[in-house]
Length: 107
Image (cartoon, rainbow, N blue to C red; front, side, top):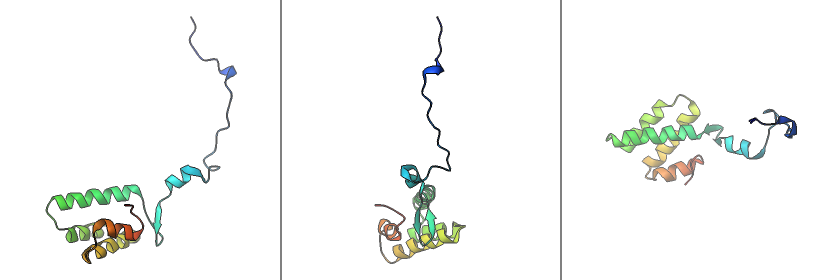
């Protein structure tokens, strides 16, 4: 009894070089949402939610929590984005509404 695959009868397909790949669903899914030239990807959003949740759970009020998150930002564009969210929340808007206003967060 012989086990194996006969490769002679398998049709070969052209492999696509990554440089050739442009457009399409893959590119769309990998794009970051832009605001004023800044990008906020899902990883940054996840960290924002996690940090905010941790700070709020520990008893820190939302304004102070957002200030701490803003102060923690290394990139100027990220700092500006989170300052914008904080300013809207301080004005009385909900966190979700403030995030939506930036264009970087979905409902």
